[in-house]
Image (tube, rainbow, N blue to C red; front, side, top):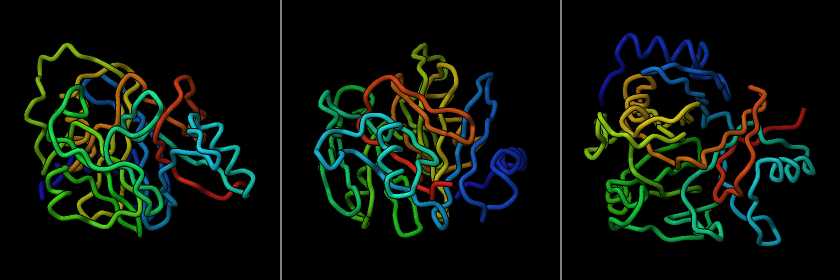
Amino acid sequence: MRRLSALAAATLAALLGPSAADALECGTADHAGTTYTVCRVDLATDDLRLFLYRPDGAPWGQFTTLDAALAEDGKRLAFAMNAGMYHSDRRPVGLYVEDGEKAASIVPNPGPGNFGLVPNGVFCFGEGNARVIETRRFIDEAPACRYATQSGPMLVIDGDLHPRFLTDSTSRYIRNGVGTTGDGTTAIFAISESPVTFHEFGTLFRDVLGTDQALFLDGNISRLHAPAQGRSDFGRTLGPIVGVVAPRD
């Protein structure tokens, strides 16, 4: 596994708090002229889940709708982000597993758009562990995932950037993604505050956040709910949402 440079390790420690044992932490990081909001989720202490449909079958759509429903049970949405690509009716494009129930199957082949820019991958988590796994590897290993969402492209694969990323690309969007630590205890989410290329976004995860595996979740529609930062984005009706549930104060 590729080691973090001393600078990357120091940057990550300053950004995300003094101890890996701490719970949910969000902050900002600057990289290659762009500011990012970065949130670290500790799978040992944070209740990370995926959300798609309300009990009536309609998509949750907005962070506020989900937060209001959680409030009825004395809980709140402490952090959330859109969690993968979806069709016009909000159905996931690829694999989607919520609380052990599979709602959509894995898509193994190349295809159009960013999702089909293979290698793509799966964010798989539950039972105190989280992994970003390249799709073919996921199929071969068949890991048990309480929650899983497939998206693409991969940003970082075994410490290397996706082979199709170009340093001189002109394709720039607000982008969000997730990387996981080698021991599987931490998921690190990031969203850019201004448009970035895939290459720039991938190097954030590789060089600053130090994740050997990272996955692009989406661009352009990217949204973040981070109430501790005074932020809850709205606008487009979302498909899959990944979020941390906490007791309501």
